[in-house]
Image 1 (cartoon, rainbow, N blue to C red):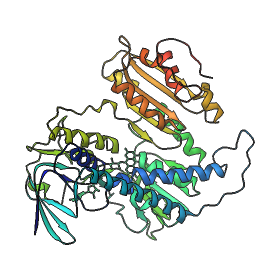
Image 2 (cartoon, helix red, strand yellow; image 1 turned 135 degrees about the horizontal axis):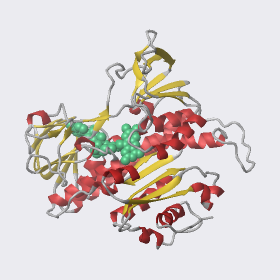
Image 3 (spheres, protein in one colour; image 1 turned 45 degrees about the vertical axis):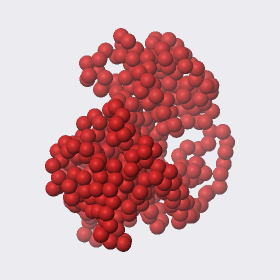
Image 4 (spheres, protein in one colour; image 1 turned 120 degrees about the vertical axis):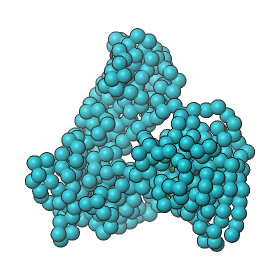
Length: 465
Ligand code: FAD
């Protein structure tokens, strides 16, 4: 049996784990990273990156097909065709390039990687089953970054036609009929992408609305986008299981009435569960928060020198949060003073249109008993949006009434995901409305809508055309 010692052992090579390991290596900490699958974790292999590749293919296809909206400037295209197998291979190529990039990053930090499933024996020791036999690693600090997995529904166990987002990203062909259970961001992103690729899509949601947690002003354009794509949405509806012939989804409306939805595939996207069982954590003295490992603002767990980051340690379950926490833990282990500030963590739905939220919405700010000012500016008055024939949506700024401190920024519209960095920077820097208003925004760009929204919040008029 091989034995290794290290300053830091990182269990899990997703965004949280690899970011921590790379930063720790850079800071001179002797680091070992254990990963059972491919470097990059959920995000790189079966999450953020492949889903955005598929969404891009779908957007290009539907644009070429003039599917969503007839061109207002006279462009007529022939019927496009798509080699879906080539699209999937292209997506896999991108994943492969990024996997190699993570490996290089770790190598640069002199991080030793061990391939295999790790089991924690105590708070300092991990046993890894590798291809060449078991290996034991003892470390002064341990970082748990084991991520999450798709949540199964008891009535619809994964297998056969019932798939998770993982299988949805590598289907052999576009299903003719796709039923999506769950109208959260993963279900809607993938459902809309397949609708654009030609699938007949039905979305079934137990709650009475899509994207619970996002306010109605932001989700209304997404609802319209679903309607334009011909997606049938059944809210307040429960998925009950597959029909007897296995070729349809049985659902029940709020009044109990049951019916079936024919489906070549049923994508269950009802959330993700943290990976905390089956590798020795149960035997440790770790305090839990429901299914998640409990952490404090430094990502310290209840055990000395045992840290946890990312999806395994609560929400929001987002790659950039995991990465930021991972880098922070590496710096803490190196003796620096840090704490995690979640205020400026952006959340994005890569639906069509896209939705972004950073900080507090108006309702959340009011709930926190704050007197606020809100400035909202529509893309229909933004020159760049008009020249791109994409005038739906808006940017909204929420600020404290008295001090003008920016509390939150939200946007919905085509391509707004790329505005998120500026929104987060404003919150991170503690910007006031005057800071945004005093920043010269390039013209003509969609980003000017943020400038105009800040001016509106201060009661000043502005147009960006
Ligand atoms: P993970 O990425 O889950 O990595 C954990 C790693 O630990 C895995 O590689 C696993 O193999 C390994 N592991 C677990 N147990 C062991 C063990 N015992 N031994 C060895 N290795 C182990 N987030 C965004 O920010 N933006 C997006 O656009 C986005 N899109 C998404 C789309 C989809 C379809 C999905 C499913 C997720 C998406 N996410 C997105 C969420 C994002 O993928 C996760 O928040 C992120 O991957 C969490 O990182 P992590 O490091 O905590 O865990």
